[in-house]
Length: 446
Image: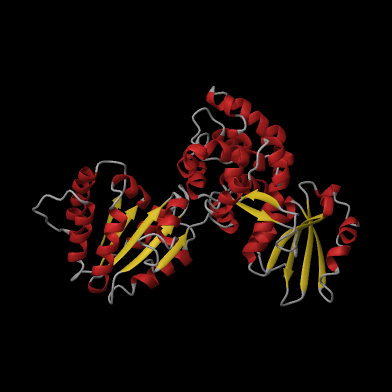
């Protein structure tokens, strides 16, 4: 697949790189697996002298031998001594960079903690002692979010405060998913919604669907639920390392949220245990879920729900994890059947999320959320506010627009609108048919 999007990240990397003539610079790149971190790095480094190291769980001595080969191939540096320590590899590169500007990439950096537990603290001394006299742009990348965050953003850790640039790479925005579908000649509102659900805008998943020449919704669903689908174990592979031995509790919570049990009370009533600490860690340490409240609600309000941030992870927990017994027995046909049977209802929720993301990504509104009152009464699917222009948009969103009763939305918004006196009010009734217009012309609806 061709290189899409990521222009702001490339610009940020270039700005940092331009300063290595005065001293070395450190970029930290995080993001879940399959998000395109390595692709971004290689795209950026294409025009510069660089050496790339991938950290796998081998012995330190074997990694050193492997890395010396890369150094010789990439930089034509000959080393005639035996090197068994990764810190000595870094010293070799810093010494070279006193007279040469280079980019050094360490991919899956967090794995160094397993290969050489003392590397981080030893490297702090090397970096602090050499950065001002050398010309290295060190780019470290990692996909275990909690470990990378702790390593570089925890004030108790040796490398805290050393980074010049922190990039947390996100999924593609909606417009990029639409662009990919258009270039494949498969764009439609139905396909955009399905691809949003099945891939969440994750580059690798979009690439898989493209590589297998999925032209229709049926093609995409058949591939995702095939007997040898790469999607079946993705959630497990991505998250078990994050959660460690407690993964079972976290997986249960995520499955419940993915299947509509979005309040703490609902989750605890099913699991019969307190989950406050787990929810906090899922939100703050792992960045997997978010709280959401009615628009303009105070932080301390009890009207709090939880949502899984990544559409693909929500999809995986709702189907592949929920029906794990069928997956383990290679009965993915059963899982596909459950997906197809529940698709209209499931897609209805994600159509609302899709429109919410579109309104957020337009950049026209300083608040975008949903709304409900005590007891989940008077729910409004989408509320977008532009305080500068004194504009409030209220939207009802349904897969089948014919069932929308247009007179109800003004009634449901009566209490909410009292908080926005003198604001222009715009009511919208949205379904699949409006989706292409909102994606292709994000400024039309201001």
